[in-house]
Length: 130
Image 1: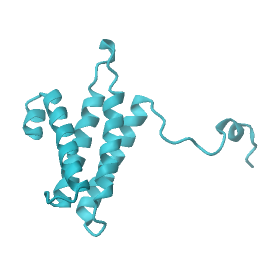
Image 2: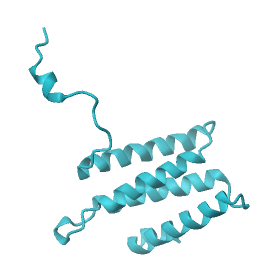
Image 3: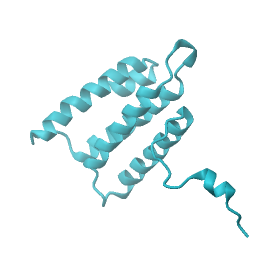
């Protein structure tokens, strides 16, 4: 449902379906109810995070929508994917790493700083390097 909606251009419906999926399956996993395999959960969340990154990049800032909320939500979804990631599955781990790289790029484009440097850049400019 999510992928069909997104492919047809209805990103609002795809985002709603993704949120419903994360909420429903996430609660079932917390309650230790039988759900789909962790690999399916992680791959769906990776797809959803990448979709949210695309939505964030195509947001129209002239209409007052910068896409920051979608970018932040993608980061939260990626964290949920990492919780259930099997580190021995190299392909799935690589797809999570790729999605995280895409998310970091989107966050940089949107101007949202996630990490504060531990040093002062102005200090580096003033120091004399031989």
